[in-house]
Figure: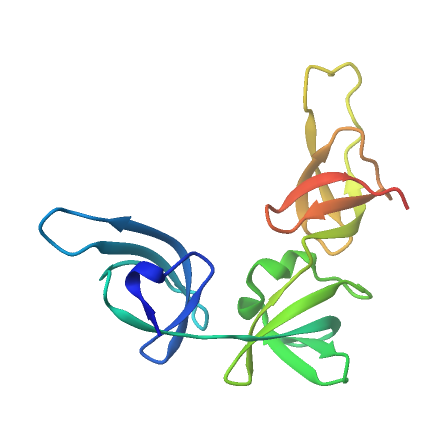
Length: 188
């Protein structure tokens, strides 16, 4: 059990039988009353976001979620299938993938992390950076070297993003999956 004042960002707590991820906490202390902990929470099952205040001495059940390394296997309308090292299959809808959806493509070998609650997969997280190939982008305009010049590129899986002006069709680029931004060209 954790008290309200022990809550920190990244902890997962049980509220009414659902796992809630604490995204942010702020403790406010006043002279007369007990301390108040303002929390920003995300329901891991539904994706619902809320901001809720709690007393510093409120008690919460801490949840430890199971995690496994998985790789993307195939798409079976309307679900994406992931496989772990024991060839156990886990299926997720596009909505359940969340931020992972723009990085999925056939034949990808990236090792992802699946998070489980009560034996059910609730999310899949991609690695911090992935390498993807540019399928189409406009040629760069010569002479514009005033700073960080960006242009739109379409990846082989259809995702569009901003890349540096010197990136061309067929280049492999490194993408930071936490910020959803282009980092650099890949050397291989």
